[in-house]
Image (cartoon, rainbow, N blue to C red; front, side):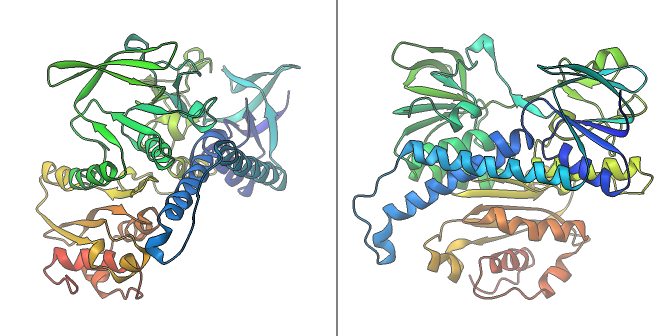
Length: 464
């Protein structure tokens, strides 16, 4: 039995970052991982999906080479090579995490962890069983794709996939049903559509991208349709089943039922926290709706036990998990970190077009009783966007009319996943419209639209 100041269970972007920060603060630290360092994000989520989407972006641009005065004839793609590149990127990132663990003198223990009383963690692997002791235990076990077996929304790995199967497809689909229009569903829909797959997205709610600002979602809806996607909103999947030749789905929409057929399907209806087989019940850790209940510092109801990242609830984002891990560990070490302010965490969807947001939507701000000022600026009014050939998009800002506080920012269009951080910094720094208006933005850049959207909220827009 080894004794540690901190044992982290789960080596995803929350867990390994927390372990590194703990080591920096002088805590003797171990990290337990049952599969691969980097977790879902580095191996099966954030990073490899962006590699896939980059291939789709390049392929899409090559197909429109004529618009840039270029010639690219006979353009084609190799599905295996596209997937292999993505896996290579994931492998490179995993090696990076291995290096960081070694550099920071963090013990890596491979196996399945289970909490026991009195600060003990039992680890079971193929070769051995062992138990370790820790003053503090941090759970960062992440989440997995949610399934709904009663409706047939359960992966078989052949015809019906989760994101893992969609990333390394056993067969290239001829047509595809995507159930769920959140970030995961839309990203895969966009990826496969770029390579000519006939894609239909089925969403239970009345609009796609349900967590985004409705105006931005409507704009994205129209753009996705121009990209060839079929979007079925307000549609409930009553029955989904694999057949010998593909997938058959019974859909109810507007009181009417019809049948959709495709060669394959992706289930992207949400995620469920990995709380099973951790011994949470034995030590009394409180869970709610499939996630561990914590405060703003990662504390659970049990002294010495903490949780961060996807397993601790929404938003289910890698950067939220990493930041949460730092806050939690600094609190453990006796520092005085700020608690997590989830409203200031930006969210991104890396489709074509991209979507990004931070803070309150216009709708949410009104429901909260805030008197607001709203600014908008279209990509078509920006010189850099026109030069890039990406003139379809929108930047939107929401301010408190009385104080000038930036309540939210929402974007759709090229490279908005890179731009959104400017607004996130502004919110964290508690800047008002005055400071944002006084800021000089470089020209020509896409970021100028961020300035114009602020100006528009106050009747001072300069270029449209």
